[in-house]
Image 1 (cartoon, one colour):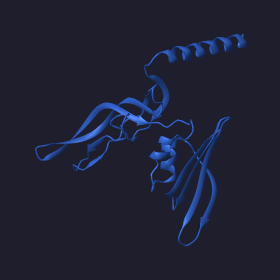
Image 2 (tube, helix red, strand yellow):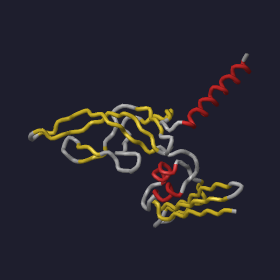
Image 3 (cartoon, one colour):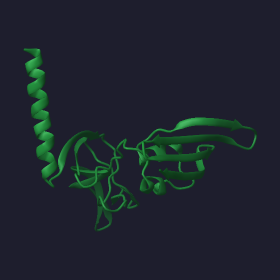
Image 4 (cartoon, one colour):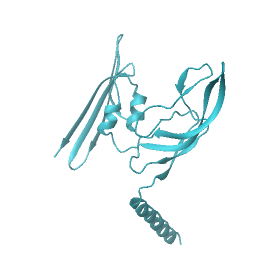
Length: 187
């Protein structure tokens, strides 16, 4: 009976995947963004959604409750959800607090390797954690060097297939990116 259940379950999952391939609609994922997560204005651009705080200063908007994201079938690195957030608007001479709702777009890197676009989005001065949040991949610590003037850590990531090799190197000094390289070869 257990074997029959496994076969039926695998068949249903396989059929669901097959049906999902033919449609251009968005597919639901199990990724959840926690309270306080920042979100983007759109999935096509990386601009963070901006609001005013209680003093009128423009800040990045943060969601007020956890949301389950839906991913785009055309670009799995971006997801969206209906989110609530706090914004202050000036009414006469006072800043009034409002709870607002909009569609929040989130960058959700997937562990499919480091693409050139992800590599290019990592900028000098970023921390290691910021680089990982963009690429979706942790990197191997190859070497460290510390003295009175530096705290260097050299990280690499590589992927080998039957037809190509890809290597990414990133060097951080005091946890700030100082150097990066992207090398690919095809054969």
